[in-house]
Each structure stands twice: as C-alpha cells, then as structure tokens.
Length: 219
Image (cartoon, rainbow, N blue to C red; front, side):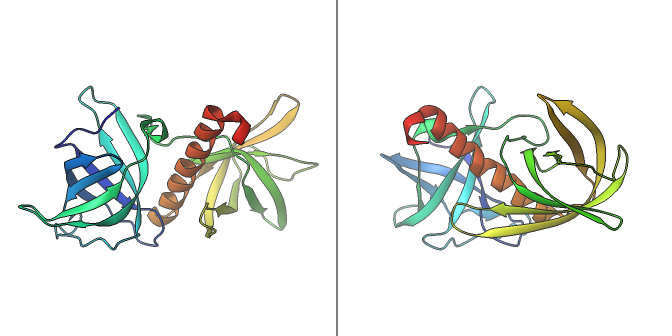
C-alpha cells in the first residue's frame, strides 16, 4: 500500500497531556519519508510548527474509504515552492486498519486496581479499550453486576512512560469464560485526555501484536 500524493493526514501527538489534532496533506513521498505541508490545528485553525523528533499517530483514508493509522516522527524540513515537513513512514505492514466502531478492544494484560466501597482489588485485564475493559477475577469479590466502582488503570508505554488513568466505571456483568471468571466493566466518567491515553496505548499494543504475528520468532 502506498500513501498517494494529496492524501489528507490527521496527526495526533502520542505523548502529551493535551488532546490535539493537526490536519495536513501529503505533498511528496520518497522511500520511507513523507513530505507534508505545514499542518493546521483543527481546533484553533492556526498553522502548527512541529518540532523535529516529535512523535505522532497519523491516520488517513484510502480511495475505497478504508481508514489506516501508523506511528510517525518528524525528521526534518524541506524548502521549496511549498515549505514542507518530513515525516518517517513505516512499511505498509505496520499500518493498522482502523475499525469503524467507537473503540478498538485489544487483548492485553494491564494492571488495574478496582475500588468498591471499602474493598480494593489488584487485578489484571484480559482486554481493554477506551470504552471499557474485561478483568480476570481472583478469589471472592464483593461487587456484582450493576455496581459502581472506581478504577486505577496502569498504562506502560513503549518509550518508558507510565500513565495512570483514574476513572469511575460500572460493572456490566460477571461471567465465566474458559474456566476464568471475568468482569466486564464500562468506563463512565473518563475525561478526554485519559481516553486518548487509552486509545494510544491500545494502538501501540496493536502494533506489537501485529509484529508478533508477522515475525513469531521475534516475540
């Protein structure tokens, strides 16, 4: 797959406390470098000056209306009739297809603390998305279907950063699957910044899972 000249990209900073989206167009492409015009901040409509080395999640749509995303980094600038910013472009197999549902759910273990009244449990997820998660239960628990709980979710990123998402949630149901007791939990009061952290974490884990599938001996 090749990103065509004129394709519109949306760029979201991967490690920031602010939720920002920048929009730009692909002007040129050579080898593993994409040249874009100077992007515009979607919220402020102002031109953005991206710093060399800054990392972004880039997303775009193909002619057949499929959406893909990849992680990119600003590598420099190029002068010309149009001032351009240079972005690293990974191989097409590292592109992730964006599902058209609200949030993508990724199977991955994540540490999560669940507080219910005076009880607190240290557990691990079976899967996670920005809308909710499934937690593997151990031993006796006090909460039941429909109970309100508070979560502290630990998100370790590949660059060494760790984000702690603290949010209210609702226990949707408790069930058994493959001899495991699973609690499905819906996030109910998560702010936009924390949602972005979870979305980016899920995207990063998708990349890791994709590479393991492609190169099983490197896992």
